[in-house]
Image: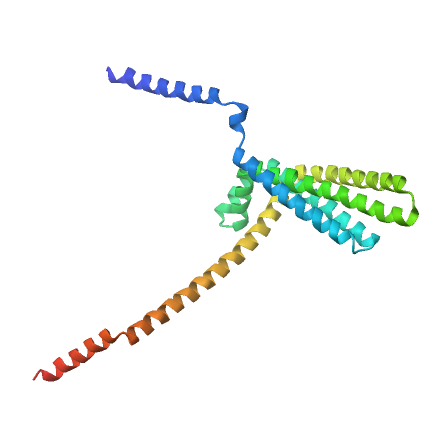
Amino acid sequence: MEDVPRKNDKKNNEKQQKSAKQKKKTPLNLINWKWVVTVFFSSLSISIVLSILSSEIMNYVNVIVSVLILLMFIILGVIFDIIGLAVATASEKPFHSMSAQKINAGKKGLQLIKHAEQVSSFCNDVIGDICSVVSGSTAAAIAIKIATAEGSLFWVNLIICGIVSALTVGAKAMGKALGMNYSTEIVTIVAKIMSFFSFKKKKGNKKSKKKNKSKNKKEEQEDKSSDPKNGNVQIHEDDDLRKQP
């Protein structure tokens, strides 16, 4: 009977240790610092590349093409904003049933939802904010192009930047409504796209493995045929068989 309270004491001690560990958690400990560093450097590199491309392209195209590029950046930011919100608010239940039916999109959807913090941070903060910054710089470049022809930079810049900011905010407001209400459908579409590209990679890996296997077999056969030791063994065996009565 003495063993029973000892076991209970062990359980209580374990519970107390777990509760103490949970209490020790601070806001700084909850932050994934590796992800913060990767997001910092990835956003830095992506923003530099996109700003250089937009500025270089703007020098060689007219105003209409520049406006189309501006709309492309706005739409790209809105799409990634919708994806990030949809992944953050989607439920795992439909994707569990899809993965139980051995559907690749279900597995990819579960991966996205389980890493919702990283996915929403990348889509909303990295891509979304970078696209908004780059769209602002392209809007300024368009205003300068129009002002060189018209001669009134202040009013042109004011009107274009106001239109761009209004379009961005309005489109993101519509996108948030879609992301909240159709989160499962949006995550399913993204998961299907991801599974499609991963399936193509698997096919390419299988083909390369088959090629490597066939090459290895050919090399082994060539080594066996060119090895003089194997030939000497076969000759000795033939001589022994002939000597036997």
